[in-house]
Image (tube, rainbow, N blue to C red; front, side, top):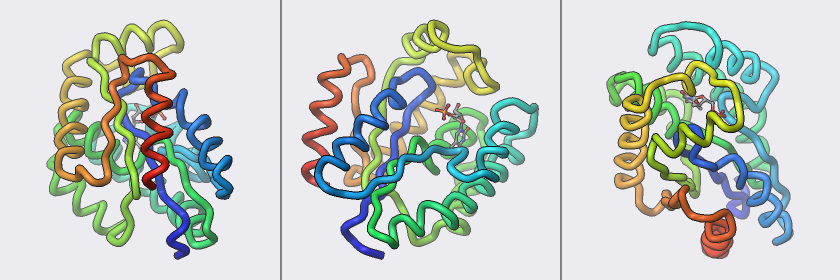
Length: 203
Ligand code: TMP
């Protein structure tokens, strides 16, 4: 793998604002002369996008949810993420395994060691170089979501679910302080972009 290429992920509870920064961030990376692919999870390949539709819209147990998101992730890694990084192309991904830890672990209550097992199986050798965690209180995030879209299976969860998701994210970030940058989702867009830009310089 060309070490020049970086794997960057964006994380946070639904409505925390991350998605509005992903394309902008990729443009900044491009502006510094790198090739970049922008992608998302669940999704990023034809198969994984089909899985996304199931996971977001069909009732299923938390184990099936976890297995499906990891199946989608395996395909995404095999067909897009690893080949891109090997080719020297940066990968900017909206959500990755931290989402499984936060949503299926924190939110649904799946034991974290079960998720760690799947993580070791699917990507024992690869972690994002940088993860931006958009942190926001669940009530503000819920108000933002209601203003812009119809809710999917996750977005229709109650505030207590998102409180657990947020807590799991914060614990995961605390355990990997070199990888995570926590951003306050309540701050104005321009403020957040400034912090992203500063942090990109150190990548
Ligand atoms: P998005 O709309 O921000 O792309 O997120 C899709 C939803 O999927 C979001 O509510 C979080 C959920 N999700 C999981 O539950 N587990 C995962 O591993 C991933 C990647 C997403």
